[in-house]
Amino acid sequence: MDIKNIAKDVFEIEAKEIAKLSNLLTSDFEDAINAVLNTNGKFIISGMGKSGIIGKKIAATLASTGTPSFFLHPGEAYHGDLGMIEKDDIVLLISNSGETDEVLKLIPFLKNQENITISMSGNPSSTLAQNTNYHLNVAVEHEACPLQLAPTSSTTATLVMGDAIAVALMKLRDFKDENFAKFHPGGSLGRRLLTKIENVMKKDNLPIITKDANVKEIIHKITDGKCGLVVILEDDKINGIITDGDIRRVMESQEEKFFNLNAKDIMSHSPKQINKDEKLVTASEIMGNFKINSLLVVNSEDKLVGIVQMYDLGL
Image 1 (cartoon, rainbow, N blue to C red):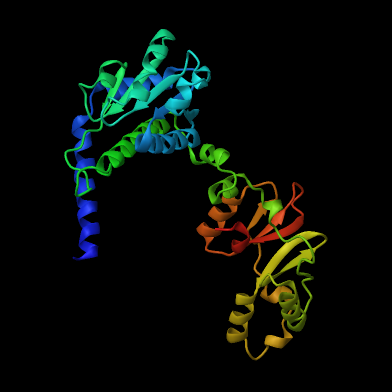
Image 2 (cartoon, rainbow, N blue to C red):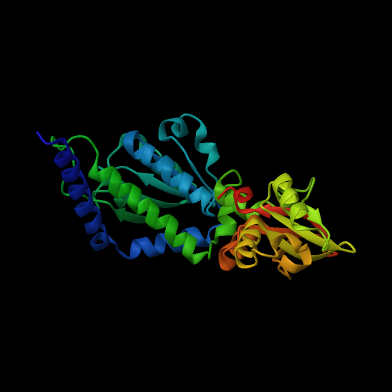
């Protein structure tokens, strides 16, 4: 038995079932999305078993993309946690069969409290579908499980429908990367968008020389500074920059008089700078646009306060 072919069969079966989902969409999807957009409440997800596990992921995706959401276990809800559901909340109930007892038990309370309800099941004629405001059909013809018993294609279809909800809400809310970063401050995106340059820049023992420094002094300062460059200052103002690449190029092009040169003969004028209060993402964009690895960091008075390099950005 070819193990790789087993995996390929699973991929093909589930991909075909997902592709069919678009044909199952009705106006209920659009109406459900508009209901979520227009509510002042939360979007609560509930489901049992594998549906509950998928529901937890859907709730997590929604919460991280601008829709206040959490997962509520139907069993716990029926035994005291119904108080977590407020009148303005919208509740998504998930059950592949649409007949899960623990989920159906929530409906009388939700109707009595006049919550807007959305169901997600594989049976539009199920008890669940018939007793909610909007129904999202996630029916599949074939599970990837060879016994047609373990939820495989059906849970994938449910997850994809949840992603469709989250993405639709993101686009309609014009949810941007900086919004995402607020909910993920510990991730690489959050770091780039929220962290300031001054928090990562090198600020001690900066490699600074004068314009009259000779080549030997320049090379020693580049080596000691460990930034691959030196900054030329004149009256506390940035006058230029010399990188180790500049040294190599001048050494090749002006070999005969190389050791008679001074910093003013080699330096590049108007080096790229960035304010210490800018975010890492801005530094990344500047470095990418100009194909450079370092930026001089200045304060509001354009005085040198540090150096930031590509590896400092943690990209």
